[in-house]
Structures are given as C-alpha cells and as structure tokens.
Length: 199
Image (cartoon, rainbow, N blue to C red; front, top):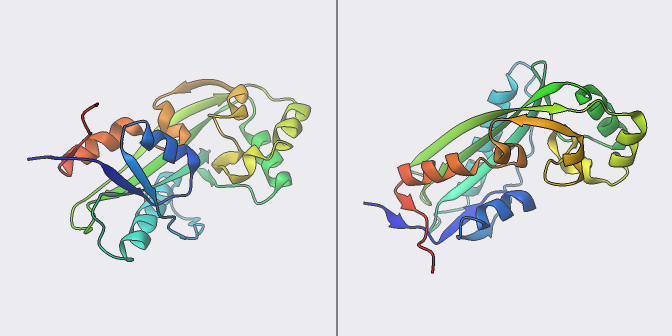
C-alpha cells in the first residue's frame, strides 16, 4: 500500500536539484548536509559518488526522524577513471575544461533515499556519457569568467551557459543536471510513496 507524497527533504543546497524535484509537484524542504566531500584516490568515480550521496543522507538523518522521505545526491565527472569534483578556483576550472575539450567523458550521479526514520533505503548511481565540442582557449576563458563553473563538478553546468560546450549526451540528461528524476521516482515507489495527483 503506497502513500501519497506531499513533501521531500532534500539534503542539498543545489538550486538545480531543488527545481528538478519541484517539477514533480511535491513540496521540497531544504536541509544541506554540511558534509565535506573527501577525495578517495583508490575508488572509482562512481564509488565516490555513491559514498558521498550516502554520507550526505546519513548526516541529515542523524539530526532526527523526519515526517517525509529524505533525498541526497552527488555528481562526479569522470575522465579516464579520474574523478573531477568542483574546481578550487578559476585556474583549476580552465584546466578541467581543457581536459574535457573535444572528447567524451562520463558523468556519475548517485542518489541515496530513505524514509524519514531511515529504516527503508534506496541508493543508485546513474552514468551518462557527455561529449564536448573542441573548445578554443578564449571560449574557455569567457565561460570561466561567468563564474558558473566554480560550484559545479567538472567545471560546467549543462543547464546553464555550459550547454553551449556540449556536442551530445548519451543517457539520462537529468543525471547530468544533478538528479536522475525517473530513477528517483521509481525508488520512491519502492519505498511506498507515490507522486501526488494533479489538482
């Protein structure tokens, strides 16, 4: 027996994830996890994304039982098996974008979902292939000057001006944005929640 879903607690301050969740017709409450994302040099980028999502979820659940499901997510850009997180500064963003120029890379977005008491859980990692156009140095510098890349894994945001860098996407576009909505909805159903009926 499933129950109607009216609210979700998002363990993230990401405006992109917030807007994606709101598009499902649910009320989203925000509780940033405060989790610092350590580097795991011996782990695969997908493992890193799964661990970070789980740790963010646990950080919020430790604050007490919630009357709604709790969702956390993490996105990692993968170039030849190396995880690219958020750039530390503009110079680092230029370096990252130079590595992505003219080639394909992987984007791993993991999410961890739990009932408000933490007893029922779901976790999954979705991988999408993204190919960039060949980027000119001036194009990279102009994009970095917008400051858009500085808080994003791999130094670009596909939902913003960074979309102009992308030649094609193979897989779940929403995972590249930061939340694979279709998978999240199915995980909610497995936990016993259904989306609200339209008014």
